[in-house]
Structure formats: structure tokens, C-alpha cells
Length: 287
Image (cartoon, rainbow, N blue to C red; front, side, top):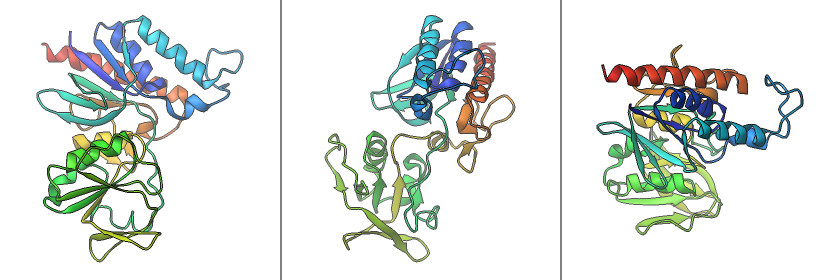
């Protein structure tokens, strides 16, 4: 029968789940919250509702509908995406393997406004520990963030780097930070270096010498997850073709994470396309 994992429980992810589950494909939706839509007080430009509907209600109805047709919904946070013998989604609770994965996590977050962050991208600033840990073997590195995603990135770096420091930039650090990982809570002033990154300067006048800063603010965004697989990215959007397929076989994307019009109707459409294409992909695997 095959199985699919859908990362994201918003309109795009749930729309995809309706098509895969109804086609008899074992479907797991992994999502923790539904982003901006969850906070929308009124939605009045979506087909089929004579009166405005709260965003939260629309989300809850969609999830109930997906459950009814057989999709499993897991309230977990995806922190990584990789490949062993199958595509593998890493969450804060464990790892899940699938024949096919659909990323539907909404639009990527903007990077924090820190002087030097953009200037050192590719020269010390990274958004993917799995991709770039190798370049910092035996060196001191930092992870910019404070939550589960930052911890997951730090754990990827810990076996490779000489030291790993989570820099929270003034935020309260997670109480779950494992032993062996340092924490600095001071606010960041700027990143320093010549041709490559050399240190983080803080507003309290201190500095932290590092060869790399790995940005992991909040939860793992769509482009960060796609980058971990080596999928093609256009700016902050995941590059897809007309079938919602990425440059990685078996990996699809739908909704705001693909760029363009950020509307529910577009997300639902792309989710439907990604879902039907995932069904075809899985069925072709067994031929």
C-alpha cells in the first residue's frame, strides 16, 4: 500500500491528506499549530461559507475531515528531513519513515535582523546543520535560537564541532537543553569577521569566537526542511514543478511554502495536486 508523511496541518497539508487517505495510502500528518490562519478572526473569501468563518474553526473542521477518511494526525514538531533507505522525518518525539513526503508548512520565517547575518551567509552563517556541520569539524560553533528546533540543530553539531553554544538573543532558553551544550542569553549586536565569520558580538560588550552560526529560530520552516534534503530553493520558497514535485524524487511541496499567492484557495489546490501526485508516485513504486 505504501505510506506518505505530510508535514503541516494547515489547508495545504490537510487537502493533500484527503486525497492520499481516500486513495488507500497510509497517511500521517505531522503538525503543531497552523500558523497565521489559526489567528485569523474572520475568513470571508473562501468558497462555500455564506458567513465569515474563524480561521481556527476552518482548521479544526479540516483536521476532523482528514481523520474521518483515515489520516493519522500527530501534534508533533518536525525538526529534520533526511534519507536512509526511505525518506525520514525527524520530530521532537522520534523518527518516521515514508515512501513519499509532502512539505506543507506554510511560508518560511524571515531571518532576524542582525547586522552581518546576511553578509556572512555561505561564509559562516548556515540554516542547515545536517548540510554544513562537516565544514566546522573541530571548531567552535553557535546555534541561534532557543527552542526544540535549535536543540535539534545543536545535537547534529555536537559530535562534529569542538563546542556548541545556543545563543538565544535575549529569549528564555528551553529547559530541555542537553548536557554538553553551552547557552548564552545575551542579545546579539552583530556578527564579526573578515572574509569569513569569526565571532558574535553581544550588546553587553562580550564576544563569542565561532566559525559558524546556524540559524534555528522558532520551528523548522519549509525551506530549512527542504535544504536538509538538498532540494532546490528559490529565495525562501521551495522550487516545484506543475506536479508540486521538488528536485528530490518522492518529495513534494504545497501551499505558501512554494511562494506566490498566499491564499487558502491556492493552498488547497496545491495540496490536492501534491496529494494526487504522491498517490501516483507510490503506486508506480510497486509496479
